[in-house]
Image (cartoon, rainbow, N blue to C red):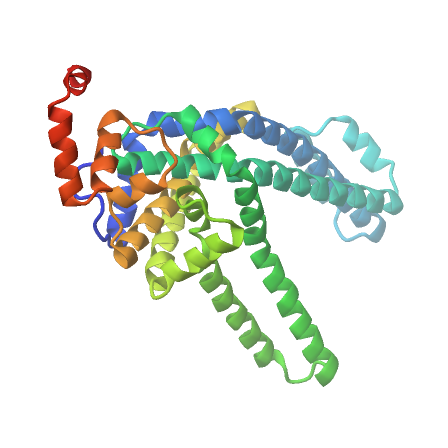
Length: 371
């Protein structure tokens, strides 16, 4: 249970502290959601990534060895060393014989196959995460809402609640993920147009300025639209309405959101680098490092959803005088008797509430139910 005034305006550091408090307050519920939704995709993704890594590595080593051998770019010793490194990393011994007897055309074929594996791997991961991420994000948001209300999150109920809003979550997540791609296409088109008009002369500074403007637009757009998920889960908004709500809440708070996200991702990357540096020599490249990666991702998966939810609630507290009564009226939950009584009385005016309480005290049924 969170302590203190939950519905108060938070600073950047206060927001990050609130995220940590919420996570450790109900860590078991968050881990259960992660395990229920991600253990199979994570295991499958890790397996496919491991297989693809070995295949791509053998293809690339083969291409480099063949192209170097035919063009005398590298010495034979350098080629042998590269092959030995690949074999020591898990590539089959038969690769050496195949590489030594192959031609440059075979090497180009290996490169094409490597590219095909990379494309397949990227598509696979995008499909898996695009399908599962909206449901997980919605479940985490619902769990954070329960924590703010003061009730213990039920991980099954959280998943059920998110599944009811899965379609708008999926559509909004897909559109949100298209923002970087749309900006890249737009910037590329602008640069190609400038090159076509000017012949590519004297436009280096203009190209740099275009990329700078694109970066500013990217960060501004991503930060201002990032709270679409809580708007869908908590306020039952549609796709367009959720983006409008997020844009409205973030107006004037762009610096706050950017700083919170920047500090969060920097800390996350530093922790990951430290863990990889310390444990990779011990665990190696085999199944142990894969299991460790799945465990770490399972534990850290809820953090982004929690952070977005805390930012969303903080913005509503700041902009709308948001409180527990508003949240209880908006969240689709089966309230406890005390919560139901709170909602019923708070929805009445003072006179009606007084009469209702007097009638309730005179009722034997009410007394028996309270006992």
